Length: 196
Image (cartoon, rainbow, N blue to C red):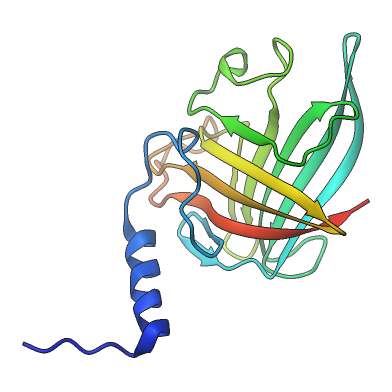
């Protein structure tokens, strides 16, 4: 028996396809994201982000504490309302910056059980997936997910990072009692353009 490969690119495509076909872990917050190119799936509709942006959202107050908020956007097109996207919002104490930080979301619904800079205020403020043409919409209000989001150091107006955001299939919501049929995820390494 003889195996043939269509070069390194073909082999990498086979490996990436096999990785995407595997079931998601029960908790994606416990391990670093797989070392692969960034891939996003919104209820089974997959895309490779053409645009990755990190934007400072300004100051948030919680009691006497102040926090800087950041939004990471993974988009299928460079548009404010692209056909497909995934977003994550995180906070850090005012002035501490996002460089070199790792943020986690545990696979539980309760806010008080999430990693937090102060009790009752999770470090991951929210996440979402949208497939506008297909009508897919998954978010932290209605669904349970787990995540590990790690940022490297800034280099000019970019920052490298990796994300392992997993929303397992089989979930229902108060508005939709039909269990979801496919996983949603954002997995892999990225280089984000920093916007002010």
